[in-house]
Length: 387
Ligand SMILES: Cc1ncc(COP(=O)(O)O)c(C=O)c1O
Image (cartoon, rainbow, N blue to C red; front, side, top):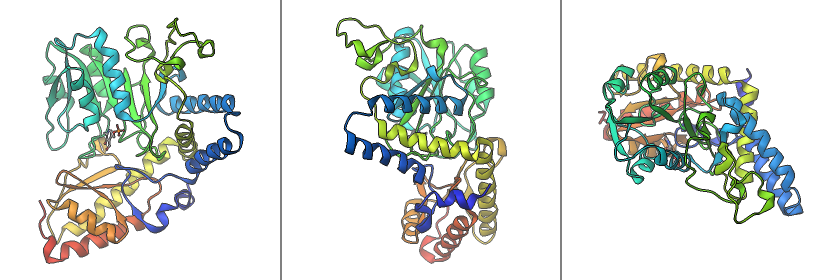
């Protein structure tokens, strides 16, 4: 794989050592071109290409389905993770008694995983990690007779811990739990197989590891749920034949796209299409391999740097639990982020950690630059405050 060629598709990498996919990735020229083409078309032709845009959307839906081994009918385009998770919580509310049924989830979840359930008055039970790891045993210990739904991120945003979805899916199946996954920190980086992992519902946003920019997300609903759930929202595009524009008959489509209520957010969906083309060109396995390669290089350099100083890598280093995120414990992470940004190194601060993400547009030089700028900061008196 010519990684330099891939990197050149991301103009942002010319200026920045951009190590921040966990917050938001830059988009590639392929995504930008797709969105721009849409605006050029609507600029010059107004609404005349509506049918072609719908066709294009369906082709992208198929590519999304292939990414996670789902069926096209199981995919809905959303705006973001929160949007998708709200729809799931709403769908299950009708069939699961929120007063009697607990949702089990992880202590460090991003709020998009938890607030939609709290809003609908589900009871949440939180599992605690040990050294950032949520073991299947510990999760199992927290299941009670009231637990009916399990919500977890595939990769945790604060530590980079990656859950084994196949093992957890097996537990959910054995214990008859509905398995809900937030894949925002993994989709586009780590392979996902919704069938193999027995996932009931899955959501992700486009802006991070998918490299598709803002305003587009994905909701996967296993087809076994199509007939069983309530549909908490509906619009004119939710019915079997929207062209009828029947304002009395609620003939809902029994597939995930029922939640695409009205006119689509075409430009954002098309940007996602560009991102999927790029990922397909590279290949899922190559993406994962490259992320591990860069992650290993980062850890090696951090360990060298750490020999004279003292900080702790918070992320689990066992390959089974690793992702594209490496978090380093620093009390003053916010300050470090600001200082690094002045040197065109882009990382983020989460909790007491400095979060460094590596993706296919990065290279070893980005990491070298990050390490050398970090070293300079740590060598300066005012920054000697590692946790
Ligand atoms: C695990 C996880 N889920 C979701 C989000 C973002 O949520 P949304 O797509 O609703 O903006 C983030 C962003 O940091 C995240 O880390």
